[in-house]
Structure formats: C-alpha cells, structure tokens
Image 1 (spheres, rainbow, N blue to C red):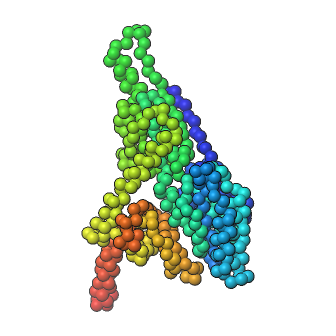
Image 2: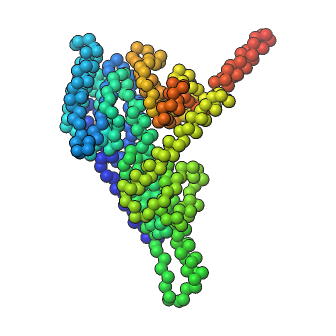
Image 3: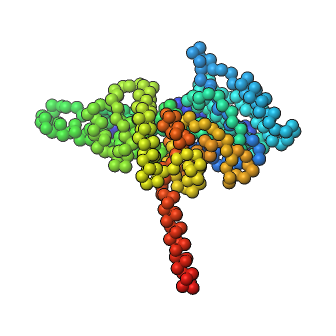
Length: 413
C-alpha cells in the first residue's frame, strides 16, 4: 500500500510564550496536551505567604476586528487590590512586582491571533511566572488573588474543548486529525493503493471483487492501526469517524473493543475542509456532553439514595476528596466561588471553593466533569461526587476491628 504521511502544527494553538523571568517555565513548541501539562505544573505550586495572581483575559476581537486593550483594566484592578496589604510589607512588594511584569507582558507579548490569555505570577515565590496564549476565548476578564494558582477556569476550558481524534475516510483515502482547544493540533493523510479493473488475462468479476474487498479491508486495517497509535500516544478519550457510508463499517470492525465506547459516527464528505471538520465534530461532541448531563446527575442522585456511593454538597465532597474516595467530581459550571480555608494549609490563607475541589480531584486521580446547566446541581450547592467505595464500609471495618480488640482483651491477649 502506498502511504503518504504529513503532520502540520499551525500556530498559535495553546501557544505558551517563553518568559524571561527567573523560575518561569517555557512550554515546548509542540502543542500536544498543552493544557493538561500546564495544569499539572501549576498544581505542583506550593502555597506560601506571598500572593499569587491569576489573571484571565478575553482578547477575542469584536465585530470590527479589534480586541479591547487589557492594560487599562489591569491598571484599575491592580490599583484597587494593592490597598489590601500593609504599605511597605513584603506581600505588597511582591504584588506590585507581579502587577508590573503582568502589564509589561500583556503589552508586549500577546499574539494578534490569540483569543484568550491565562497568567499566573508570584514574585515572592522565586519570581514564579507562567503565561499561556490560547486561540479559544476564556470568558470574561477575571483577576483572582490567593495563595495558589486559580485553575478552575483553565480546567473547565480543558474539558469543554477536549482533545480528540477525527477520521475522515473513503474507500482508499483517510485523513486523521487531532483537535484540541477548538484548534487543529495535527493532521495526517493516509492513501491506499487503488484497484483498477484491467482486461489483461480476463479477470473474472468475482476475482476482481475479491481484490477490491481485500484492498479496502487492508486500507481500513492500516487506518485503524495508525489511529490506535495516535490515541494511545495522545491520551485521547474521544474518536469521531466520518466519511463514506461503505467505509465506516470497515473501520468500526477494526477498532479494539476498549475504544468502541469512545467512538461517534458522523456523515461528512472526504473533501470537507479542515475547519468544517473541526466545527462539525466539536459541535457533535459538545451536544453529546450536554445530553449526558442529565444522565450523569441522575446517576449521582440515584447512587446517593440507593447505595450511598455518592456525596452531595461542598463539605461532604471535600471530605470525600481528602479521603481519596471520589472517582468522579461533578462540578457546576456556575459554581459560586466562595473563599474558604483548607485546614491542611494552616495559615496559608483562603482558597476558593472551586479551586479546592478541582485541585483535590486532580491530585487524587478523580475525573472532573463540569455540569453546564446550573439548575441540575443547584439544590446541592453545585457539587457532588461519585465514589469509589462507601463511607459506611469504613465504619463496618472499624466496628469489626473494635470487636476483635474487645474479644482479645477479654481473653487477655
């Protein structure tokens, strides 16, 4: 089989600028899993006594093609915040240095194609500074100050624009895309050898059909082999198959059983433009996500009522996360960000509820699912968790242990 392979990496996609400040991290030019890697690094930040500034800016152009200037907004907000520390204190000095370099970076470094920016800075923590430019809007401008990076918005963005693979195919050609954050990360073209009917030797119709069928089967096999490799390497959880109605079943027959639940099928022409493939596939995935919200919340409530394999509300969910019980965290997309102190941080300062939940979930390997319809979780404070094991199970074990100890004590053991 003749095979042509080409990868393309358009910029900027989740582009992270190289920061010139000490202790600043520079993401590699390759865009693979950029937000996931970024979140992991930010979660490793150790809270301390100095303020951490988390700045989200919407740099999306308006109807006239112009983006609002961020500097005036930053000057105004930073001036108001600076009054909240004692004059001349180390905390105020750290804050002022952060404000200066954030404004300088925003003024000089934002790419015109960028639609959203996230910046995290703490001068007092060895001049910590991280900045990421995205082609996806981040919502309204927002500045948060705490003792650790505010990651709720970045985590929500990562889920709403998932990294996924799409295959557009016909009998002899396939285009494999990897999309993430609403942008093309990679594209690969696979072309199989076409089978032409010839008169030399007088092929029978049956022999010709067998040859064609074998070629189509081999093409499907090679496409899926490459797709599986991409999915494994990229950590992809969603696959969209689109294209010729005769070719799709052949691809489905080759997909490994563990990947079948990831697959969604669409009808698209093999010549559909890259942008139209992205638009159609992302819309289909987000539609499925919205439809699944009701089922997911219904499962949460059912588990809570029937087997207690769920927790509801901020306090119970935080406790279950601390115990490592939560398998999947359900978080309202409209969760009110209330400042709360985490006991394990002691005097480190207040941490927003959303950041507590998001950070704890990722630290304990729990899946974070954002529920965009705020009404679904409104009655339970906007949060709940599906559990790996029951709290009651621990109580049963504890009672059993106490009973054994009591028996042994009576026996003088």
